[in-house]
Length: 481
Image (cartoon, rainbow, N blue to C red; front, top):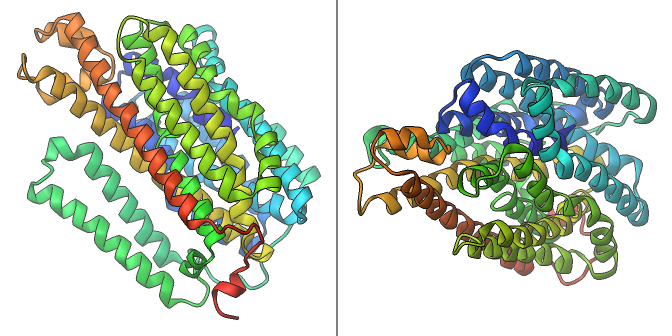
């Protein structure tokens, strides 16, 4: 369900843009509402799972996710859909944090955990890999609403499987919920994403814009102070002394500096720039996502044989290489052919990185802190994803603006229309169809270059931080006990 939800929605964004209708910024918020809500409560869900039982919170998350998906399918305006997506993201956070903690608790040896997370990667990859074409086919034959409504059906089956197969577990030392930390982290992430997405409209250097950015920084500082002042924090900064855990979090973030935020924009590139329809674009997106289905078992074997210091940086460097290949595809007349190899290479890189970082993060800390470990791992992913969805959109707009500036005094509304692939508005404003496509192509070139650079930098950082030895380092060692 989570994999399908992540990868199927981007394929229908062009449809949502026309039928709701939704602006480019509203399309960003349709995606960001999900990730911001997940960031907001992910750590809290991990803490709640440790306190009240992982199976119980997981089951509640499944039920609410199904109901929220039903609300998404009934939405008839961008605002209603964005609101329903917030609820969907919050319940998805419970599912995501708990499933990793459950696997870590029920499969404790290295070999068992590697096999379990390998299968987890395969099942997750099925949703991710076939989500684009499933979303496109459902939207074409049943309507875009069923891309959301299908999760209501899946939630029923998932709930029965959970009741039958999941063993209840909890952290006996978890006695309180860190509400102050939750509020501070949520406000910091929300203000930063709002500043990036709305910066051009409100003015990046205006008093309003600077106040929002300052609020994000102050909230982050407050979060750090709060977490370091309580005995049982939901985000234990002592864990960063465990190099194995810190390196894994860099890997988690690295994927979401490049691969995952770009899946939001790739369908627009395929349809608006290369001219594919939604179903054709869905098939091409398989090249981007299907490798994550077949590579995880190999990645887990490499993790056991060579260790995280080998496989995690290798995965991130491979993602970066894929983005560089896609960047070359923006040149010349063969972009439709050249884009596929880059998609495949980036997908292989994701498959090499995705399950090893989760396995490494949860295995680096004591099993009773599995909820916190998975919460920190997934929070690193979701925060970096939310920020980079907004940041890639900002870079895309800058690239479009830069291409139009020499010949046309483009307005913010015009640039947003081009970014969403709505060329009719551009033509009505006096920009030729060819100029609009060229400007959008230029913006995507900037985004692809950013994705390559970010993945390589995060790969280099993870290589530096991860220890040479593969022995597990426990939190007790980090805290000096």
